[in-house]
Length: 485
Ligand code: GLN
Image (cartoon, rainbow, N blue to C red):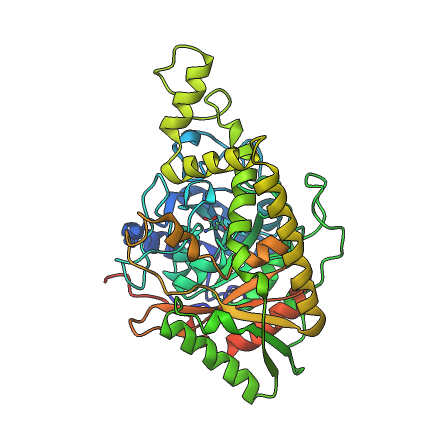
């Protein structure tokens, strides 16, 4: 089967009759079977996907197919899909089925996307390596001894290894962009409020965003365009009109780019990441763009702010998993209180328990002002500082991660080291701005390196056009890996 970088290429072959959706689905199903060791999918909907494919082929023949005809899509295990299992990588939701479909997913289905399966992720999207999943870790297809990144690890590896054309993930602090960077694919977090969160299992509601993982910027733009926009079921979605991201003109202007010098001149950043980032900045400068180093004094406060606020929100969001309403229930309990305690102790993994405890602590009466209120204030300051930055610049460019994909098990004993993997990605979630990770090459071991472009709030149109401009001169960064290693 041909390697397709974009849906447009697939649709061209579909319309010329050299390809059918059924053939495409069969191809992905056989790739999924041969890549089972990667552990990217936790469930595959083989028969259903074949049936949908046949129906879409008929629509193509009738001339009634939707804009996503031919898109074979995987869903991170946090997105509701009616009558399909949904577990957020957790034992606590064992045997739970979604009673309705997430708005974002429904809009893609309505445009004739074919859902092929449910993808592995860190439990409740908490993690940076996919090692916190009750289904076990996902292996990076570029080197099976290394992590996929997280929390949307299965979704990124599925695109990396060609097991589906695109995936839908969620990004609360980097969970779409970081695994995309570790796997050499494109990952985008839209502005907070651009895409409905209805049907997304909540981790930290004021940070959570649904975003696509794709092989090209063009497909990220198209998927966003179809998912985005007002929804009666989520009052935090903006009423702002959705631009036609997929038909935005090519980037031709000279951009004003800022980068934070500290994000490059920092000992904890690997030399390959530094070099690839500098290569991109130097190239942009040589092409006539203005590239300026800036200072962001609040950078050091980003991770603490993120972890105080997200654990606080998580402790509240996850209180509903009590053994009464959903999935797993401990069989050892004697009364209601022990039912709650035993269920939650037995069914939540270590990282989720750590975050619930941390969140409960920062919200407790004696510490609320010292931690939660203070972190809210810092969030506001970071937002103001970021807004000031975007008064002067079009884009903020940074590495996505301080290192490329690390070895499985390398950071599991040290949560702080693991949290540092998110140092560059959390800012976009703390402030709500859109950001995208684009592959720009590899390190000395052949592991993918990404670059992050952040744009002003609701500046997705320009961000995507500029990302496409960077991407198109770096296509070599996108790879399909040999699965037999
Ligand atoms: N890795 C980050 C965390 O563990 C981000 C997670 C996410 O974006 N869902 O919180």
